[in-house]
Length: 78
Image (cartoon, rainbow, N blue to C red; front, top):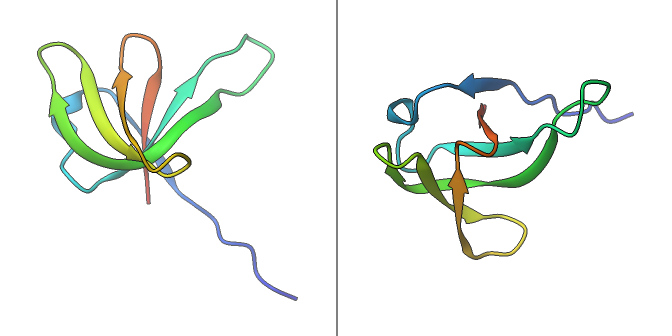
């Protein structure tokens, strides 16, 4: 039997905690009775703390995507 991989995630409250190459997830809260839903996952390419935006290389699409931290929470995946 194969052992399932466990991922450890830590919520990022300030964009200044992120660095290029960090693996992150962007999560959207869908309601009080549900867990947050992962809407994007990828590696950090660039950050703009002044406007609350992080650009990642999205794993699902292979494209560069912007994440607005006012709209979703950001989690570092380890």
